[in-house]
Length: 201
Image 1: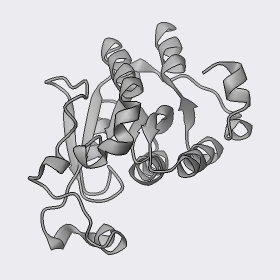
Image 2: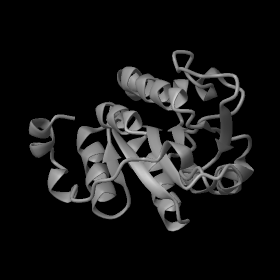
Image 3: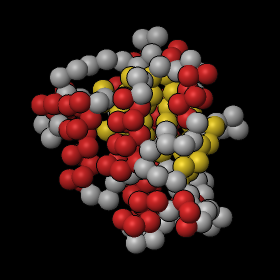
Image 4: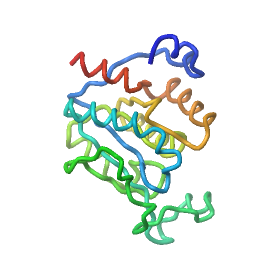
């Protein structure tokens, strides 16, 4: 992101910390890029696939998450909050979008709540891989992406949060999350900044 664009962004006054991800200890988390969310996910696909490609070339592991529910026993609070308008396993809506740049070795973590860490074994997998940092991308910025980023932070992972490879239903909600992330949880980056960071290693 250019300095002129950054200076006029609604979250720039909170973005007082700067750091580059370390490809040797980093993983990319691609949150819930499923057909159910295609209306908000499609516009960021070019930025997300660029992010994935940059990470793949830098040998940064890529982990996709897939949100799905199998029975009322796993609806939890999302069932109450969204009036059972949920993503059900086995339906086309639950599948990851075909336009994603996916590789055969990419891991897929299945979840049934906002956090990619809750009852998924993700933390243990990251520790086993020697991961100390995560880059958060995908949808929805203010729900699953933000919750996952916050949980990563409190679990001791350094967090980088993408400003151009995340999306949600509303610009105001998206920007509110970026403010929260910059203020207390994550270093913000975009494709341009990530490309620069990787080229330095």
